[in-house]
Length: 333
Ligand SMILES: NC(=O)c1ccc[n+]([C@@H]2O[C@H](COP(=O)([O-])OP(=O)(O)OC[C@H]3O[C@@H](n4cnc5c(N)ncnc54)[C@H](OP(=O)(O)O)[C@@H]3O)[C@@H](O)[C@H]2O)c1
Image (spheres, rainbow, N blue to C red):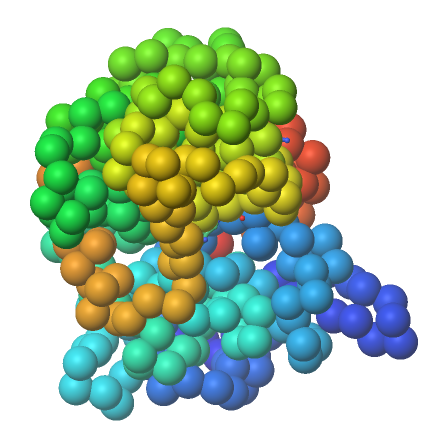
């Protein structure tokens, strides 16, 4: 490789926050033992917060942001990874505490990487990204009602924030698991696309924004919630006995206004999902499950592919809830 490569660098010298695209030397990448030629990254809510001002997540500057990426191993002394292997990185606080994926090269600890499944390209891996991984973790949590708790089949699942990166994949994988998915969205114009992803019903999020009843009619065997707040409170009060509510996000609010009745009268379970602190073994397993559950030709209709330069213009829209597409970042565009 040439010693030079392009990356976004954020800095905070004398309390002046900056973000710019720089040409860097390979020697900039000091940590890690596997060098990856990055193909793709994407834009997550956490990325947008970090690009804005470090989001209180970045402790040392300068830093290359980008919390996930896919690419090809360029140099490795580790027997697990050889030159040419397709790899994926999500979580592990890369892009926060370590240099991340908004870069043509990344050097990371071998334990942070997993092999990209044969049937998935590096582009498809970032079409899914951290959001997709989180969606499948949520779907498995909801399904645990039948698999771990030996309860009857999970038939009806509600997905909130359904046009978001997590929500879209959740709708598709749950539907491909044979579940009737009801999607909540604030974008009624996306109803047809949500149905193409597999949603059986689409509900306007306004119906879930009011004060929740202590206990509402039990409607859902499970819920995948990406938004928190009153939408989550209403979903909890509408969950059927022994249902599981998988909670991974706070796109609407950090608050949760609920009461004890759904838990003590219906034994429902609120299951927190975190995609960052999961074992490498579990990550590898989850990625291996995707090929049978995803139709990329449908999912890719919602993707907008941007360069690093274009990303810097577009990321604030995510913080303002104004994005209509999932952003795939082609670092070589
Ligand atoms: N726990 C983890 O490991 C993990 C991993 C990834 C993401 N997350 C979190 O999960 C959440 C979703 O991530 P994402 O990548 O899907 O984000 P995203 O692409 O920005 O999507 C969020 C969706 O939530 C809905 N929404 C936005 N603002 C809202 C509001 N004020 N009230 C109600 N709904 C609102 C919108 O969908 P509709 O218009 O369709 O309603 C939006 O598309 C974020 O909070 C993210 O930080 C957590």
